Image (cartoon, rainbow, N blue to C red):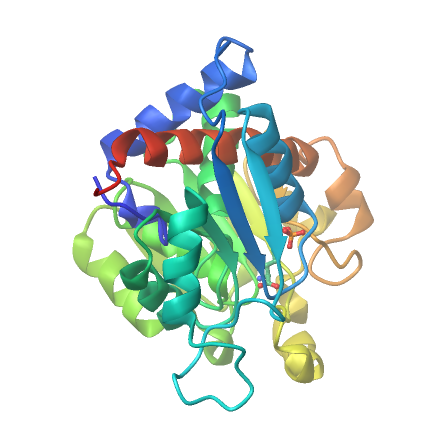
Length: 312
Ligand code: CP
Ligand code: NVA
């Protein structure tokens, strides 16, 4: 298995099932040992975070380990000759590899995190980049699996911006059979490379449409995210005008299955991509989803740590 978890597809479908089993056992309180006892985790955050940061920090503590919050002031990605750097991140990665057992990082450039995995002698977990948000989507698939007792061929309508969360759904669709419909505008498409890989894998049905009603028709899951992601604040007005018709609201939910699950990774901009009624309505599972971030982080950490042997 891979050392790092930067994308959902870094786990095989079989490994994902194993993560779900671990997660479910821990959620039920079946794990009595403290597998991270005497282990330390560096949690590097270059963007704000409530759910991801706290679920990692609390999860690490529950597993018996300790976490250390690191900001851009202490650890920055970037070129060797960047004048604003404190040190080249190669050196920082080598130092962290000797002091801690795992790195969790949330930042902007995905390529920087890929480079970090090469310099680190310990596993790295992607806690969100501009390209992917894999821990989120693994937690969301776990939530669907808990609610529906299956995941294969579930119809998921993702509505809104073709961002990191949308890309991670596509990435998941390249290893797990899904019926993935993406309702978005031509100008807010997901990453072309990720979309191509998802389609070429032929594992899932993948369809993009600019018609929100056809995207959600008889769907099992309606999913959305903010229209302007962290770092894209200057695009906010443009995205709002492009994506307004993809709002999840009571009227749109009527076109999906009666018992559909309404999901949002949060934070939500209520009244924009989702209405209060949709978010607080009977189909909504947004807070179960948020809680499961805690459980899945522990499953991901445990799976990676069990599969990793430090080279002497
Ligand atoms: N869903 C999510 O990742 O939330 P945070 O940005 O608060 O971590
Ligand atoms: N797409 C959002 C997700 C936040 C959890 C962002 O990147 O800001």
